[in-house]
Figure 1 (cartoon, one colour):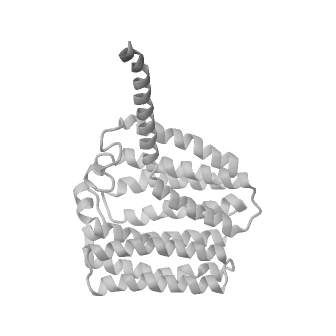
Figure 2: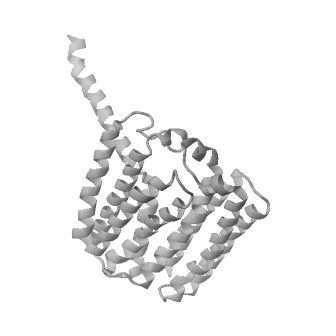
Figure 3: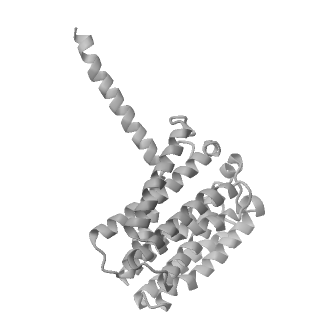
Length: 300
């Protein structure tokens, strides 16, 4: 009797653990770290607009953006489920590990898009919804297939990656204006040396996965030189918020200091032909740079 009476409890616990694991796997499809960075830049665009937004306007805009970004990432996980097995950072995802049927991931991605895009179109405004749709479509239908064909996918992929801060601006103002375009430009250029750093220290994984990159197509020397060129471009681009009047002298000083620091790391790697360890440092510096830049923008 004691054994049979415990069976429902054991079964319930197993089902509970199974449900929790499934939820965790579904959340992992949205790439929470990347989505968090995107929301950070979206919020930066909203904050910089200085529009008198209510708490719920903030919530709706960020939830809609998070859902759209999560849908794009889930579609990406579905489409790259085979190549993900060959990369250390993606091999543990639920699809390469066969913890989830591909159709489940696809349905989840479709459901997220079906909910989040109307939230942006109706709950925020049509312009922000259109930008969200553009980001989703370009990431899934253009960038993802290009990754196995040409290193120019990096540049194409920088477009949807740069749209969230512009979406934050349009969510607050309902218009595409100079400051919003400046934020787009900053994120667009920032992503290029950031991506090159990843491609350098994960070169073997990219090759094994059948993906291409600048280091694989043109070599490490060319990739390091391109990174330095983009870092040089980052200096004038990061000064644009000051030029259009949405940030003051303290921001400009911080932007130049951060840019020179990141640039110094890049030049060191280029001149001395540094290896994967340097590429990881360049990558880590890119994250600190972006955090510092947006913090400086928020302060003014």
